[in-house]
Structure formats: structure tokens, C-alpha cells
Amino acid sequence: MGFSHRQILATMSGLVIAMLLAMLDNMIVAPALPTIVGELGGLNHLAWVTTGYILASTVSTPIWGKLGDLYGRRSTFLASVALFLLGSALCGMAQNMAELVGFRALQGLAGGGLMVGVLSIIGQMIPPRDRSKYQGLMMAVMPVAMIGGPLIGGFITDNLSWRWAFYVNLPLGAIALTVCWFTLRKLPKGTGRARIDWLGTGLLTIWITALVLIASWGGTQYAWGSPQILGLLALTVVGFVAFIFVQRRVAEPIMPLRVFRSRNFNLAGAVAFISGFAMFGTIAFLPQYQQFVQGASATNSGLLLMPMMIAAMVVSLAGGVLISKTGNYKWLPVVGTTLVTVGLGLFATLTTTTSTTMTGLYMVVIGAGMGAMMQTSTLIAQNSIELRDMGAGTGASTFLRNMGSSLGVALLGAIYTNHLTSTLAGAGAAGGTSTATLTPQTLRSLPQAARELFQHAVTDGVTALFMAGAVVAAAGIVIALFIKQVPLRTAVAPARTVEAPVDAERELVAG
Image (cartoon, rainbow, N blue to C red; front, side):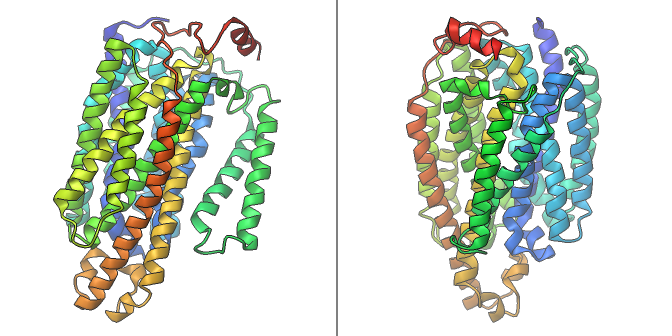
């Protein structure tokens, strides 16, 4: 199956719009979170506004990938866009935190299809050696989301209502649906003879949800040795073992275990896990510090995220060009994990008087690291699997990145909330306002003593979570060093490499 340069560009026009839809949502919502949580009165559920989305996306990613392999990528991709728009509309109508978290989860179910759909379609159309060039081209048009998203989210929050942070998806989504409907017609249809692994899907949902709940509740709502946490731990282990057992025996596993036979695939997945942990941990909690401590408005906190976004975009684009020209990619994950570790370590030194200039410089470091990690981990993973597993393999790789995001936001959110509530239980009462319903605007009306106490608590919380993130990112440096430089394929169909010798290749085909 060959595609001309013109056909690729036409198809990618639709993919870019859909990717914008997914990326804009996360970027727009981040600056609005302090106001959303304050108005709906749910400080304890702050992390779940993001975690609910990422958790649902994590669970659904391998499902969408497998459905694309079986039914064709066009129909499943369009379905994910439509479902995303429905979730966006419902989020805008949410009346309490429980509804918002639930509707964000619905958005996340669709978001998993958007991300894996774009990556799988690119993987099906373009050989790995040329793929980085087109992925770099896609990143070149991401400034609208990466820079414009936080600005739009902040402006909406300050001048309209936070609900429009979700409603704004609807017109863009209508354009994405229309363009993708026509540009994806040349993609091959699936067989339609699907045997959906519903048991595997259920088990996957159970053990992932239990694991995220442990990260979110352990040491905060429940003691680590409590029956609730121990029960969730047992459920995680039993669910995971049962999931592996089922995947080895069903005809159409939701996550084919053969894709994990490649060492490079596994290492790239671990790097993807680290990148998800770092990216969402940073984006989700930095606005808390910027708005509550540095006194930035929602619009300005979006603007203050620009250094990180620009750095990620520039490094990703430059890395894609270099990979396309040289075929050498091993150094990028090493550099990326190192920069992310350094950046998170710098954020762990924040104080109540740290200037916006310094935080901007720290963001450049983290952004450059993420730009080096994100695209490369997907490229390495796709170069390590067969074409028949492109959807499932890409889904598995994206699944690992989302797992990092889910656990990162849940764990870091628990650290942040625990520090805030334990050290500042009386701060809201001092000003007649509950900390659970405290917005950046109401904070300014509190007495100076209460305001300073709250700001110190926020600073303690974010520095603690960034230190934990730096430890995880440091492990990524070691992992990245073990990635092997395997030649990138120059055709869409996989070639034999050091990773897949003749006997192993036959085993994969037979399996």
C-alpha cells in the first residue's frame, strides 16, 4: 500500500485538526482548573478532573487500536471524534464535581481513540525512516494548541465562563469531522470479522483503576496499611495476572503480548511512561502555583506556560528532521530524560518569592526534554512491531504513556492535596472561606496572614510533588541508555533487524 506525498499531506490535514482538538482540550482546561475547583467546591477532587480523563484514555487506548486493526481506522477514528464532542458538551453542562469528573472520563474514552488513531494512521501510511519528517511537520503546526490553548483557556476563564473551555471544542470538532470524513477515504477497510476481547477489556479496566486509586488514596484518605488500600492492592495483582492469562489465550487479544517481545519496544514504552508522568504532572499543577502564589490571572498563567510549549515544539521538530536525515535516534531519549529530570529538580526549589522569569527558564528545560522524548518513543516503538500489529502496538505504547500520566497525576495530586490540607486546615477559616472553595480571586480578599499561610502551603505542595517527579524521571535516564540503535525501516512493511531474526520473526507470525 503506497501513498504519494500529495496524498499523505491531504490525509494529514485532517489528522492535524483532530490532534489539535485533543491537545487544545488539555491545554485550555489547565488554566481554568483553579476556578473550576473553587466554584464547584471540590479541592479533594482536583486531581480527578485530570485523572478521570487520563485514566479513561489509558483504558480505551488499546481498545481503539485493536478496533482500528479489525474494523478499519477511518470508521473508528471518526467515531472517537464524535464521542469526544459529546463528552465536551456534557462537561460544559456539569453542575458539580462528580458530574464533571464523570463527563471528563467520557471525554477520555474518546481521547484515547484520537491519539492512537492519528499515530496508527501515520504508521500505516509512512515508512519509519520518513515518518519522523511528517511527524515533525505535524508538530510544526502545534503552536496553535501548545501556545494558543493556555491563552484561550485563561481568557475564557477571566472574561466568559470556565464552561466555554469545553464548549469551544464543538466548532473545531465539527471541522475535524468534516475534513477527516473526506481525507481518510483512501485508508483500507477492516475485515469486519472481529472477536472483541471483552473479558480482557474488563480485566484491564479493573486493575488499572485499582492501581490509580492506590496512588490517589494511599497515605491521604486511607493509611497505606488500611484494609481499603490492601484490598485495592490485591485487586490490582489478581486483575493483572488474570489479564495476562486471558491475553495469552484469546484469539484476538486487546493487547497482543507479542509486541512486548522486542526489548526496544519495552524500553521505548518505559520512556513514554516517564514522559507522560512529567508532562501532565507539570501542566496540571503549575497553574496552582502561578495563580495562587505568583498572583497570575488565568490568562497570564496560560501565557506563562509558553516557554515550555515552545521548547517542546522546537526540539521535537528539530529532532524529527535530524532523525529523517541521519536515521540516528538513540541519543534523543537520553537527552530528553536528563533534561526532564533537571527541570523537575529545579521546580522542586520553588519558593513563594521565585520570579516568573526563573520559572520560565525552568519550563524551557522541561519542555526541551519532553520534545526529545515524546515523538522518539513512539517512533522506536513503531519500528519494533509488525504492520499487522500497528494499531495494537501503537495503542500499547500510548497506553504506557497514559499510564504514566494517570499514575503521575494521581500520585502527585495526592502529595499536593495532602500537604495543602494538613498544613493549612485553618487558613480558610481565618478569612471566613473554606480552602475547598477558595479561588485565586477570593484568596486576594483574605487577611494577609491567612493569604501568606495558604501561599506557603501551595508552595510546599508543589515542591514536594516536583521532587517526586524528578526521582521518577531520573530512572528514565537509566532506561534510555539501554535502547539499541536499530536501523529504521525504509518501507512500511517491517524488515528483519537485529531485534527480529529469522526464527523469532517466524515465531511472531505463527503466534
